[in-house]
Image 1 (tube, rainbow, N blue to C red):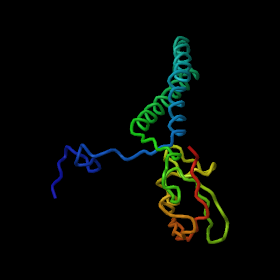
Image 2 (tube, rainbow, N blue to C red; image 1 turned 135 degrees about the vertical axis):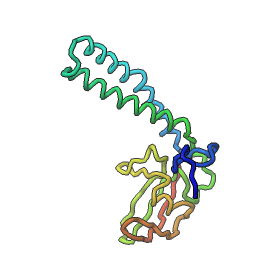
Image 3 (cartoon, rainbow, N blue to C red; image 1 turned 60 degrees about the vertical axis):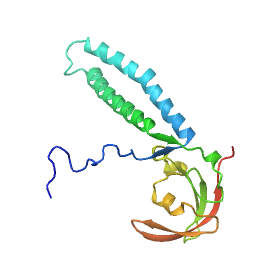
Image 4 (tube, helix red, strand yellow; image 1 turned 120 degrees about the horizontal axis):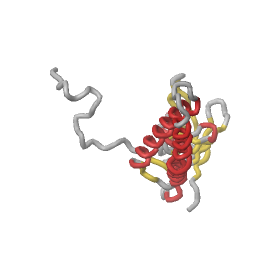
Length: 177
């Protein structure tokens, strides 16, 4: 099959194809906006000031403030671009507005029991706000996909790289309005 050399293989053939969904809770959206504003208004101007000062000190090749400052500026600019792109495609979903509260959907806090009987609690959130240490898992994670649309008492199959496990939904909670 002939492929046009002007278009890379990984690029979709339909330029109007929708961007992947970026579901996010209102709280996660607020935190990302605050981080972006902090970078734009506070951190970046401070680093630019240090780099300007260091550049005026002469030899830049051995100037630690200049070298580190330029590196930090690249990191900040990269993070600003990332946050801006993610916020542009963000779809805010408020879990408190969920009407079907007897099933697991985005924003639900779910307590489930594994085959070993141990209970675990996770909250299903956006990919950008997932934090396993706080019990927040992405809506595209294996556990969230397994729990999707389940009701209390349902036993679902969780597929992981190490094999399959049956888990039982013990409790489903949503934040109150």
